[in-house]
Length: 394
Image 1 (cartoon, rainbow, N blue to C red):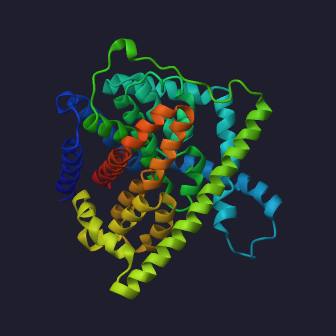
Image 2: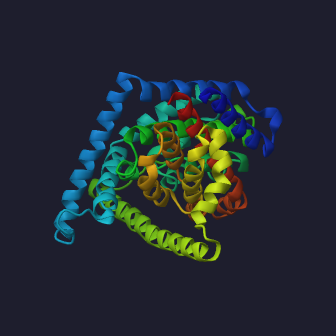
Image 3: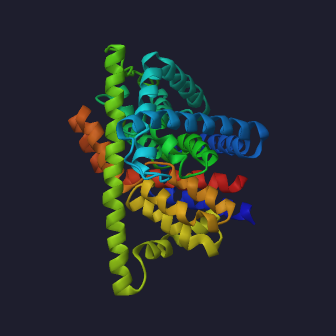
C-alpha cells in the first residue's frame, strides 16, 4: 500500500508543479526521472544498508563531538548560568553554531570545500543537463546556507536571466546550512537530517526543472564564483566566521522567542474563541496533503500541523513542537516529517533571500521579491518530494 501512496505523492508534486510551470514544452522528463532514480538509490543506501548506517553513525558522532567542543567555549563564557542537571537550548544547541561556523570557514579558506562543491556540481550537471552554475549553487547551498551562497556567485547576478535566478533561489531555500546541522541533530534523528540534506539538492533541481524549465545556450553555461575568504588573512577569516556564527545563533534565538510566544498566544486565543488551537486547525488543513504523501490518516492531522507550523514560522519552531509528539507516531511518519522539516522553506526565508541578493545587486533583489511566493511554493514542493522519497524506503 505504501507504494500506491508513494505514487500518489509523486503525482501530487508533479501536478502542483506542472500547474504553475512557465514553459511546459521544455520540461526535461528524462533528467527528472534520472534524478528521481538517484534519489531513491541514495535514500536506500543511507537508510537501509549497513554501510549507510555506519556512515550516518560516523557523521552523527562527528557532529556530536563538534557540539561538545563548541560547548566548552560556551561553558567558559557562560558557565554557571545553567541549573545543575538542566540544559539550556540557547547555550547547548545554538551557541555551538559559532564553533562549527569557524570550521566551515577554515575548510573554505584552504579551498577544500570549493573543490568538493565544484566536483559534485559538475557530476550533477552531467546527470541532469542543467547549467554548471545551477548545480554549483544546489550543492553549495547545502553547506554554506541560503544567504552565504550568493556571496560566491555575485559576479553572475548581473548576467544571469530571471529564470536562472529563480532556480538558484529555489535551491537556496530548499537547503540548510552545515553550521546548524548539529543543532538539528539534537532534535531529529541524524539519519533523517543527513538524507534530507542530500535529497533536497535533487528535489530543488527537479522542481525547478518542472516549474521553471529553460534551454541554456552553451556560451552561458559557465561558473564564475568567488572564493569566500580568499582575499583576507587567516585570522581575519576566523574572526569573521566567529561573528557570522554568533549572528546566526542570535537571530535563530530571537526568532524562536518571537515565533513560539506568538504561536502560544494565537493558540490560546483560538482555544478560547473556537475551542481548538491554531496549530490543530493548520493540521486539519494540511492533513490531506500529509495523507496523500503516505502518512496514515490517524497521524495526518498531527503531521500536517507540524508541516504547517514550519511553513508559517520556521523549521526550529516546528522541530521543537515535533520533538514533543514524535514518540507517539510511527517510524515512517517520523521519518517523512523529519525530512520535510530539514529545509529553509518558510515565509520568513523569502525576506532573507531577497535581502541577501538585494545587498549584492539591487535590481536582482527586486526580481527575487517579485517571484517570492512562487519561490516558497517551489521549495515547499521540494520538501514534500524529499519526504515522499523517504516514505518509499521506510
